[in-house]
Image (cartoon, rainbow, N blue to C red; front, side, top):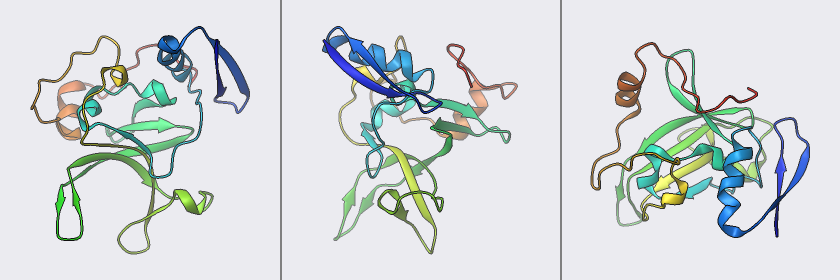
Length: 178
């Protein structure tokens, strides 16, 4: 028997028993849909393969998609809204990085120093997740989602917004308390 500790959306600690390791992600999805989280966001954010970004199951980390009043799709996690940012590949003598998609927000005075990332000028970010390189992991995909075609580029946020929302309505799989 495994045990996983969650922090509810109201801050209570709850321990849940899990029959076996193969049921762990199902339990994380179940309670994550309620906004419950397990563990802390790692420094630099969660790292996932780029191919998982289009159909990533945000409930695994206690987050959910949300459409702001301007019609932009964002990710809500522990009361903070994270914006999608596309990062171009870097190929220089000092650094070589593949293209990536990052979900981040502006840092706040209350954020611990170790989670803040410096940007241009005085601006600082806090990253929730970054999707870069790697091999697709089906276990991170929304259950029942259609896998994007191999080699097909991920659609931009603007393209997804136009095709997915004729009336700019947020989509929910199940009812959540928020």
